[in-house]
Length: 281
Image 1 (cartoon, helix red, strand yellow):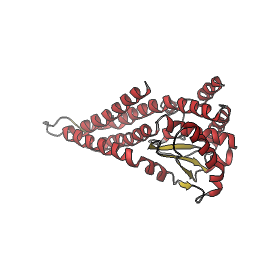
Image 2: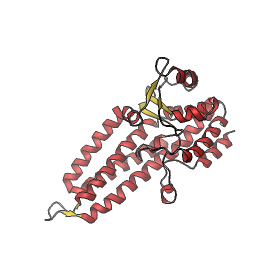
Image 3: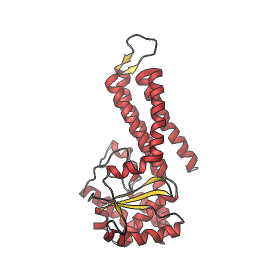
Image 4: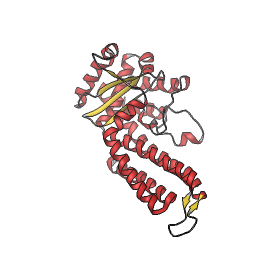
């Protein structure tokens, strides 16, 4: 069911991109948007991992590179991968002091897990293990490619919307004048909103699955429960700047905001995730 729902949502996301291109520039815009959708999906498949890691200045973690960090997270990651039956992903650390983590890549054999410096500073080994197990859960559940494609296409939709705002929408290929700024303004508002809602739906259904996988393969939900509590508290003390297009990739939403913005959060409420984990115990 999750695979069917994801395919539907990604198709809808691409449809918004195509309709946006048509609204901005008619048939020509539709063709351009189609080409953009194909390019973005191709880039997402082959290069999303490198793009995401470079965005957050990730540095490799291995016995040769950052050996002190490897000594802490390398063996526990190897042990979890053996239990899950997946290849060892590449490990990375980012210089961000706000505690967070994400997984990226296109398949279990081409995957990376990145943690921030902040998570290593604030959490004990049991909590770090819970976080890494959650990210490996996304890899096991094959969420990472879908999340990467959603991020790339979502960014493209926002770009089309901005183009529509500045250049106006098309009234029709046969009409003179050809540009309707009202349509452009609507695209500026509606397209990012649609992209955000779809990204939210893709991510929210999968966070619970990754949480459950972490509880299963670590043997207890309590490490991740404690980690999620710390993550929720510290994200307000040390806010993290992150691209809205990649916010759904992190273990906890790095973007702050209340009111209407909370309606379009890419993550379930942390207290709901903790409650679900407690039920597993």
